[in-house]
Image (tube, rainbow, N blue to C red; front, side):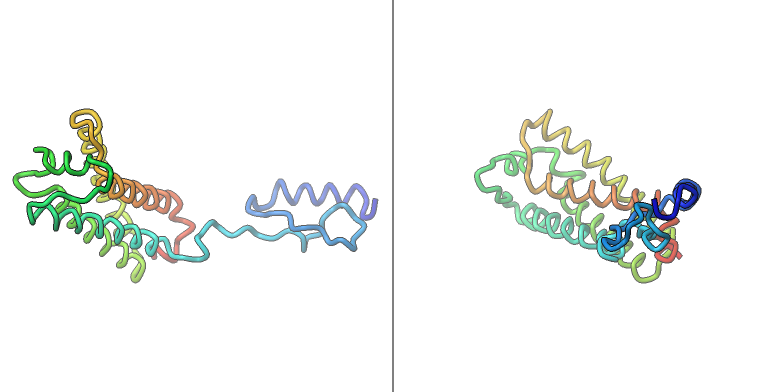
Length: 194
């Protein structure tokens, strides 16, 4: 064995006592030693979508939610029914008493929430700041709580699913989970949160 058992012991100590964020590179095919050298150890980068700031990912999801909520708001305010293709759940949900709160279509609140979340995501991306991320996280959490209640009403009470509402709800849950994940791993995004 080239390098001997002492080299292997040193290498194992480096792995166990060193940083946990290391990965083993592919071994050099021309080398005869089974023990990797220090140059074979590379620091692992934290997971990021090809260096895309998470604020931009949140903003993209906020735009998806804004488009869906805007469509539903426009249709509701014109006293029309949303188009759902072969599914009939959208019409049933839109005609129910649960589709309005104090006479205002629920989708209008979705537009207001999505615009606010989009502003927070873009401000966090441009300026950073823990409070902007925390605001996005908190508001998306409130939205998820409402969405859970509204989905329960659709499934249990109305026995109909509005596909547009489901898409909006999924985008809202995704926004909440991403904001939560970044908040829990905020030390990785120190520059983004500064």
